[in-house]
Image (cartoon, rainbow, N blue to C red; front, side, top):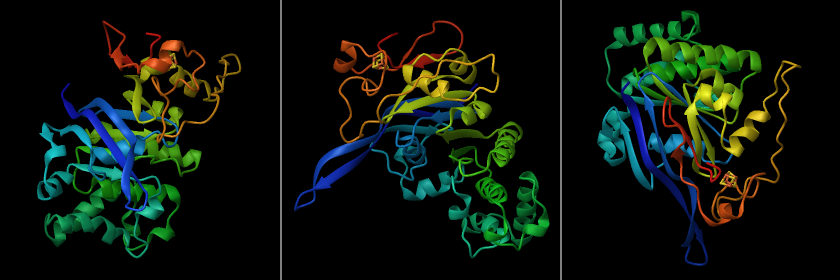
Length: 323
Ligand code: SF4
């Protein structure tokens, strides 16, 4: 299967300014040397605690944050090198769904105006074909045409997220970043929106980068999963392998925190000690070593590289000195 997205050694550093002359005193490495790929029509789940850099990574891939280094190839085009004009044309192929649909929809625009806007900006079709497209989009996300002239405040959170998804689909994108797209919704509504995203991915062949702090949510929807900690990917595997055989101690701790509804299948809960260290002053060696129950002397001295630990079958990569 061809890769739609290929990310190689992507970095996003934010300068830390200080002093009277606002000099650059150092850099916050929000995304540090991250590489992964997403095949056509696949969903790559990206998980980690808040502040691990996953949203910055999603935005850097779309160039909503300008990357500090690395390469981003979408359908073969290196979008990290495009100038502003070329990027506008490329943006049709890549969209984002935000966490808070209320904040991402203009309160003064009706559903019709919200969905027409991208078509008008890109000069696609005429008045008749645009209206037909808007009706088609509403149908895809399971909404009726009678909502066209209503405003965002007239909808529930789940309905607003459907409108946000419809807007992301307006330009027939190949790739969508869903950034905590269901985190603000009630659990019952979450599953409806997750099912909608899974259906879109299946029926329209869109590739998704699905970002969430919740491993249980990511499992539901992803083909492959990457686990992020302090700006780095620490484990990448197929969804099945990751849940059946998690290797990195951080992944094991995240998984052990997911409640299991079966009383006969209780797993030992691993409580992570301490907080995530500040990315301004990360630990030497392995970034997870200050909280890792299996840390060794070597872990403070050398950063473990992300490497493949399977010779056959599906790829399973882990960054840990235990392997
Ligand atoms: Fe723990 Fe060491 Fe592995 Fe890091 S490299 S996860 S500190 S065992």
